[in-house]
Length: 61
View 1 (tube, rainbow, N blue to C red):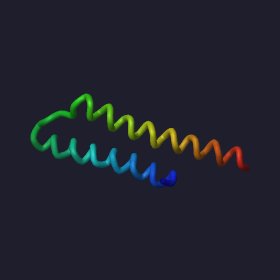
View 2: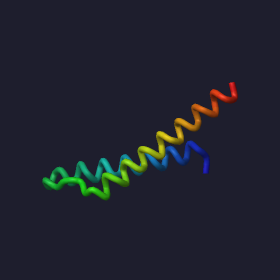
View 3: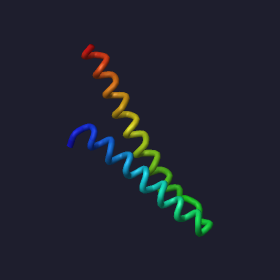
């Protein structure tokens, strides 16, 4: 799996959670703590990968 694939996977998962929460809002439901934790984890992982890619680019230059 390429880094782009990993980023795409994390961002797709985050998008799915957001869409789920939007659907829940129509029923006056609030996000669960576990869903918020999972979504934050996907965002954190994607950001960490971007940071790593930027470091590697700087080191290669």
